[in-house]
Length: 130
Image (tube, rainbow, N blue to C red; front, side):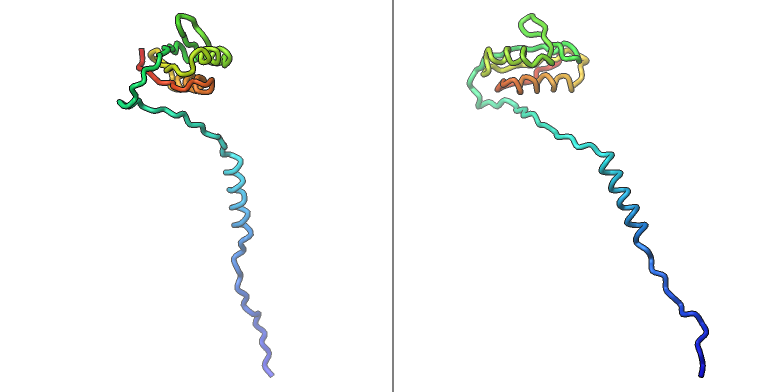
């Protein structure tokens, strides 16, 4: 009787455990390093020729990047929401025209525009750079 003395050849299977570990670590890394910001949009519409209704215009001049603006010769801060709410409460239907001084950042202009929109102004528009 013949006996087989050779060891049987076992095929080694590729272990998926290290691969799953690496994928899990990458998933955790990207989840923890990303930021979740809720973007807000601002409605900016161009006037059309069909708009015949003439509304009163209120000129607001943005003076500095820290939010200083002038209205009717007085200087205010865009961080003071109550002042802006009082200005808008005088005439909600007026068109608020924001004029920007030369060299200011776009973000400060958008912050002022957003402040007037949040205060209840129905029409806020941007003018050219002075």
